Figure 1 (cartoon, helix red, strand yellow):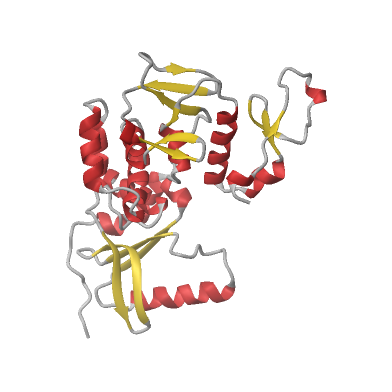
Figure 2 (figure 1 turned 30 degrees about the vertical axis):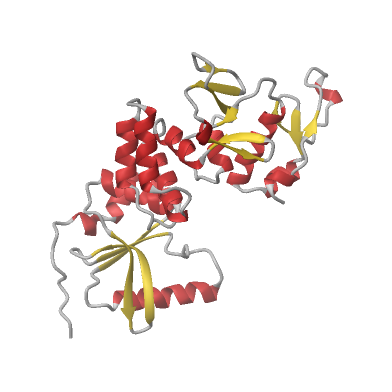
Length: 298
């Protein structure tokens, strides 16, 4: 079931708790959903459902923006989500933060607003600009990589929109935009690239293709001067998946390791990205001084 199809249940929040259905999950004041429906959704679906629930309680109009609009546009997330509905109101002089709604005071042009059903939402470009001007560098890179890879926005559009918004947060956003690369195929790969930057590793080639004796294989990361292949989750996490899939992945890795230019093969998973010391140790082969391959072709 898609988040837009999940029924929202309204109730009187002032009633004593026993009078309410204890089996429902409350998403906003006076709005709940069945727990089974909530559990059936992925992370993005849940974010979108919370926006719907908050919107159902809205008393004064506004344009959905920032993190709320990002959910509706299908952008990945990294920074903690406060669960509030974010709106932009060009008629306000000061931003107001309430327990369930944040109303951002900011200029908003007609060409920066679109309709998604009955709701007004900031365009993809304006949404990205709002997000990357205030988000962490990692979060900004994730949403930019995704948006550029999917063709949701164009890099030149974003640059022009950032200049239009003024100086606040723009320098930080432009650094993230300069670092963004549409060849990153997942948020995990984007996060990995940020970690490499923190470790001061040489930038790897992304999605490099090898022609092996077992076929053509693309890898997530390739450091040619070190002769090291790096893979986030390695397409298959060892210890999970069926035996046939794991066997095929082992054959793929063995073929890549037989390539004369390959000196090492490093894999990591999500938990390693949240333990930077561990990940840096895994990548020690890359941290070595740039060196030519020590293998010689036969």
